[in-house]
Length: 226
Image (cartoon, rainbow, N blue to C red):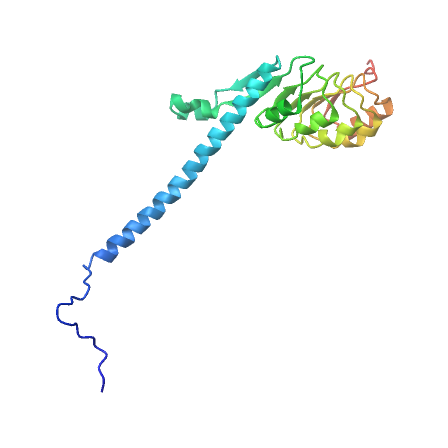
């Protein structure tokens, strides 16, 4: 019978593993996996915060260059839990008011749209077109949008419908008409709607009041005296 046992040749030493070597290697691997599991989300969060901070600073500079004003929220819970030198990364650009008749361009609007934390945007007396408004659709958290005396038309209605969190919308002295009424009626989160000075007729206003019963509408017809 042929034996399968290997006999070491003279001068050759078989490899020897200390009984604890495999255990330590396994512990090192587990520690590496745990460290990676902690480091990757942390690095991702840091990258996200830095990128967001850069976008918001850019938007604030654009607003200032256009002669407008901006308000930054700095009193969040994160500020209380974060070291002072890191708190700026948790600043949030919340409100923006553009100056009347600023020198708008597509690049400025695109930069403004990247500050997605904006909740209140006032574009009154700004020559904002339908295409300009479409550029601002990344501002999905908008609660208040003032578009008084802009050059918007009925073509802007589908864009307005994309701001699903709007509570206050000012469309006074724009070119919207009854054609926009069915779309405006889908903004069920509205609590205040101003349409005086538009081409929306009393019939269109009645349609809006029926569709949005909890919304206060400053319309084209004066309220009935009691």
